[in-house]
Amino acid sequence: MSVNPFVPVEEAAPPEEVELRDAVFGDRTVLDGPPSPATAPPVAGEVVEWPLVEAATSSGLMVMGLHGGAGTSLVTSLLAHVEHREMPWEAHDVGTAWPVAGGWARPRPPLNVVAVYRPHRAGVEAAERFARTWAKSALPDSQLLGIVAVDDGPKLLEAQKQAVRRIARMTPHGWHVPWNEEWRVAEPAFDAVPRRIRKTLRSIRKTVEEEGVHND
Image 1 (cartoon, rainbow, N blue to C red):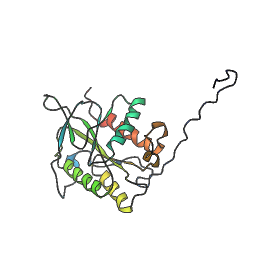
Image 2: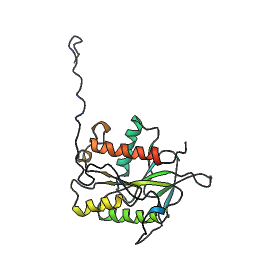
Image 3: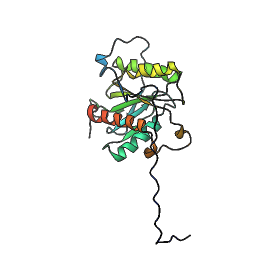
Image 4: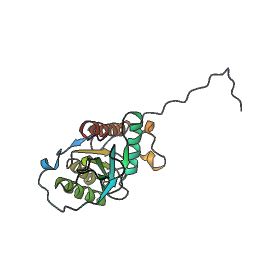
């Protein structure tokens, strides 16, 4: 059907701003913990040797999962949209191993890392093991900036909320991505991401810019 050039075409309305309440962090965007293993409290419990993987690049942010299905592809995708608009670096999904720089250079150039988990039983146990491993200085070469909890359902139990807050303070920074029902049926679109989650993504970006290492 042809369009009448004398009739003005209505522009599509901008996407409606989505509000999302964070029942775990409240108004806080980030919770802070010890900035380095040297300042972490004494570690009790199991400390495991985490598997290592050589990253294909030393620039940007490495997003690692602490177990299968942790939400690394989601977090990486969302951060990639932030990068496209504002950040001069990329986010890379590196799987479930601790990323170190490849190549022959020694010492290895440190990489910026955030770890991702879901706050179900297995995810919480993996996150606690990982945080203890970090506190024992058993994660070599790269730099952990913090840990991200990605909700596993629309409503967390009180024990899950407590676990997320506790784990957030076990590493330098802790972030929380609340459940977003739309992501069950649609690919995340940055323009439609709730303001609360955009604030979290920008907090991660700011941490990389201000506290991360820069190998470029």
